[in-house]
Length: 342
Image 1 (tube, rainbow, N blue to C red):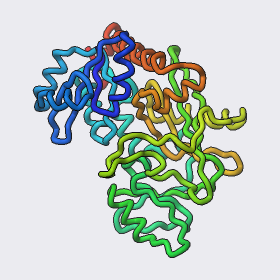
Image 2 (cartoon, rainbow, N blue to C red; image 1 turned 180 degrees about the horizontal axis):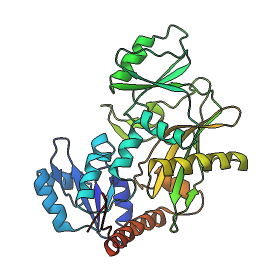
Image 3 (cartoon, one colour; image 1 turned 60 degrees about the vertical axis):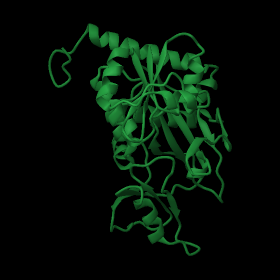
Image 4 (tube, rainbow, N blue to C red; image 1 turned 180 degrees about the vertical axis):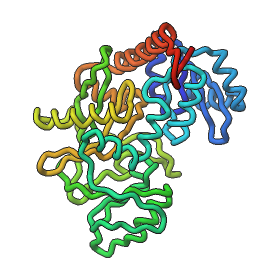
């Protein structure tokens, strides 16, 4: 039995429920903090599901006794706090744990960690309210703890562009802003690492995003499709290619960047990275993207499709590996130290 947390897990749930390999259950966390356990993601099922308090939901999950949890919450608490809850319940998670997710969502901290491991990153400085960038433009202003390019501005200082407005936009999303040197457009790719059964790391086929001189960085509109209320409803699909055309010298550089970052950040099962490649062919780490919905159109699944591996195989491999990880931990518990489990 597997437990899913909240949409965008719905697309994954709809597909894996037809495979018949596992029994699936849904745990939804609502904006008011209540939980519900609908039988599917239909409007009627969600409306009919009883709302439970946190303590009631914990008891319900204990009674469900899931073998594994597949986390789908994309908000900051969902990627950190709620993952930690399942760790406390001793229900193993597919993918990265709460500590790794917290590190990855802070752009300043994650880039410092991978840089210490020998990964190339753009020049940058961390700003707090009242600070102004010391570097000269062009640079990119990014809220430290935000995703999907929310609050991001490429500041060039030309055509009457206001630095004050750019800073105000960034600080409206976070109290810390990363001011990062703009890397001249060559190419922009997303690369991913998938752990193998023997613990080795495999670089998957890369995904390339096609940018232009008029639109040299990826903005929110390039990542999410929103409804009339501005609420994201799905990811964009245009202006990209997977597998990307990557020659061997560049592949080796991307493999170095991705595998070093994976280990340095303490990733588990898989990891993804946004990478800027300058006109000279040198890749720069932009940020870690450690979330996967396992929906048919999700990035990890699409990359694996580039090597003829389907969604079911990818999903079930990682679920089974997570179950096996729990079994091995139970058979050989750590007896001493901070990680003692018996």
